[in-house]
Image (tube, rainbow, N blue to C red; front, top):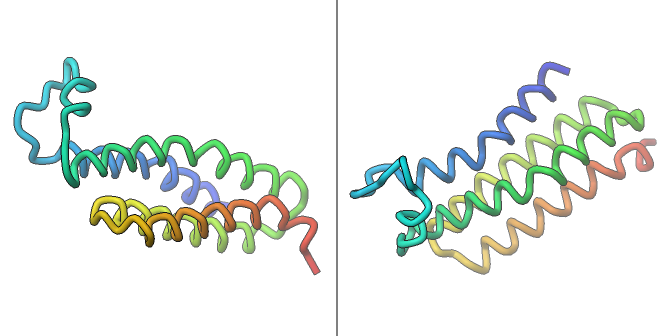
Length: 127
């Protein structure tokens, strides 16, 4: 179960990773009022900021899927394996977003959603 707990924490930090990408090295950042500065970003920094918002949006479904699967009796090792897959896909999603690879980004996003749904249905799929 430690691996699952670590996976949940890593997933929770994915938006932070995207935020660091958006803000790191940017000039004129004002931490007292960051939203106007973030709204004015362009290029890869703007895409990193958009990836941050999407990462926050993806977390509730991921957390709910993991907790529901465990509560329903899914094998924790299978849940953990799928969690790792989801996290890897979400990191790839961030990279594809920053690199402006829209088609690949959408494919990776879709695969992460499929993994999320798979986690939800793990207890039903056990053999």
